[in-house]
Image 1: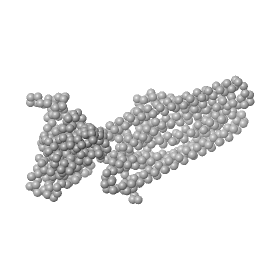
Image 2: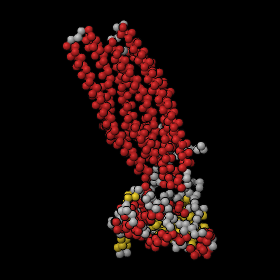
Image 3: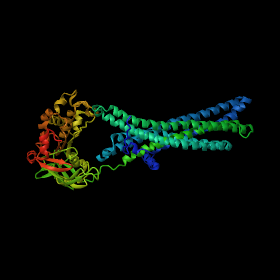
Image 4: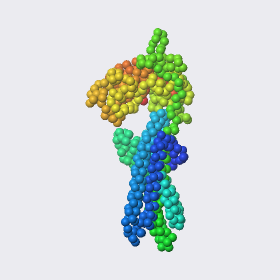
Length: 631
């Protein structure tokens, strides 16, 4: 099998982000902040945990009384008074244990509610932040990384909040209570317990430390496996087209083998810890029984005291083992929480804009702001209204996705209202980057982009994007009806407006042939439709938005030439009166543009309309003469 380097993903859930929490105190504090509203419930949880633990301790302590005051005397001289007393004590012990059982149920039930509410808030904050992050974040983090936050990390945190915390506190209270009672019953026997406890703690430190390290590595490998599975499921079509099933399986086996090895190591140390602790507890029990028996023979301790102490010994070692186990679980959960908070702390999309877009209507010779939709808009700049016409200007723009690598070099261009501007050039020339800058998906370090004379960094991003609509090469349809997917372009659009937009994009015909027409449910990104049909819906979605600026990024790339001819008139109607930016390989799509920009390595090397560029006999002429599609 070919050796493969494991993918090094980002901090959201892949290997680089895994490890012990760097700041336990800060992470615990942030989790506690989410529980602030449940503070009284948490107090009730703590009280019931204490009651449950103490009920067990007190119940054991009654063994001394039962044996010394009732069972031993009854073996020598049975009488009704002793028997009634014996039954009464048994009843009291039963009530104590019932109270303890009820308390255990209550604190577990309350903690389930607290944990689910806490995780709900964390999920909401995490999802809100993922929605608010700039596209640059998704350029460096895979979908699998983000999904790992909601699955792997949230699940480990759920286990900590619902189980580990309560078990840890319960075990801690039990240990303190039992140790106090052991000192009360016999300080001599307690010394033996202290010595054996030191040996146990040393074993936990050595073995548990190694186990914790491997458990963290196991979470790391699990995040990598989950992320890989997510990506491969999404890319099934590509995998099958290129017959890469065997290669994918090989890569998965490498990742899965890493998970198996770390899980084996983690569980090996975790599993040997329990038998070692169990054997040490048996040794402690045996030594305590022998020494206690000698003390009882010499009348230093009573038989009831020795038996009760032996039971305390058994009760004492079990919570210590539980504490050692819970520490590993808590550390793993806190590491997951820290990764979640790291994403929540990511800087959201920066927006310092103050200019907004408002609906207006004409009143005599001026525009007046109105509340109702009129189809006319204006930029509101410190009370001044500037009619939205769709004039776009690039003024000496230089940009790169990375600081040391520019994609656009000193780009200057303009688009008058209603003009169609086409971009052609080889892959990577910077065509899509220009449209990304119009949307302000990325901010430019040098130069300026203006819309209607206003720099776009002064316009609020949501308002700027309300003035733009895009049709991308890679369409994305959401789970819902065809009607809802088209209406996504403008949520207040009526059914009639949606249908009109579909007709404009020539999508109405195929929609009418669907099982339920516009109410047909689409799932799995519309996989029950052809790629061309999906793209027609994307065009209809842009049409219903009725924006002054339209961006078509390979909008007809997945539509056959016959269908393209049918919708060309509709596309012309869609672009009528709009400033349109077109990225296309097909000559038929760009030849009617008012201006065609030929890009090469981030620079505009030719510009003009189709006839002018043909006359120049430059790059555009070579492309158009050499093949049907521009590439």
